[in-house]
Image 1: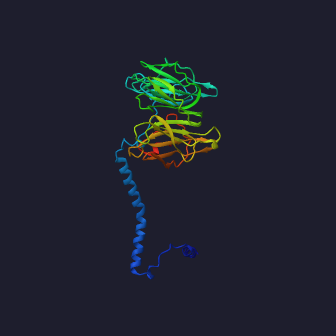
Image 2: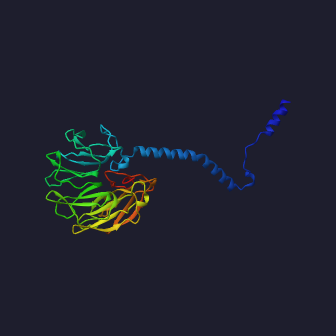
Image 3: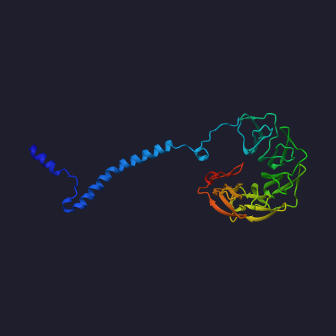
Length: 357
């Protein structure tokens, strides 16, 4: 009985499929055997290739010149939180290292004073002796306005008069003589527009005409002859786009809060003998918050990076306009959308994917 059960079990057990090699030619049988052996070897070959690749990567030196191979380590945290909109490096005391100006804005009705962090051996320390009044600052920038060899600080305020702090032997002192009208300033930039050797000032305003202050002997005077159409400007940047030796002005325009339909196209003003003339507008309006010049392709002329943000659930990708013989042509759009709002400005690096994201 047990034998019958055993035989029954052995008969019912499924047998592994065996190719009917008897009906095949000898050549086909050999090919089948070779393929079967190769199938068994594939996992071993893949494992060996993976090990060799890991060994190569672990033994290959890291090239320090490539920024994406390097790691940025947090080195400093400001001692007090602020609603900061703009920061700028500059050697305020002439000791050879860079100090940090911090432009603070208002939030929920509370405004914070701007700050100066002095650099001592690579350590940033708050200058408690510089105590400006609280302001609604959107932009700060360093520049030697009076040509005395040290850096002065221009502060762009939104809803309050802009301010000029002159550098007196490393101490920032408010210039009370210069008292521009109150405006909605979002961006300020120094540049010698007329080629006379001193720095003039471009002022970007939101909901009011942008402005140009000419520098005469260290005194800033509003150029009333330049009166562009009102835009929602968020960023201005000087650069010689046509290579003729003078500075042209890029203007990054955005949208009114909560209204994508109010976006204005970005603009380019060419410098014609010291006069700014509108010559180009972007074909499509975006909510641009930052613009920056840089030679991305190394061909000797300046290309334009554009950082775009969001407005009322509508976000726009960042863009790159390449410069071809002085003409700006859209050549790249970021593959992903980000709410780019850079108080410093979008910066060019050696590779575009690290320039603006």
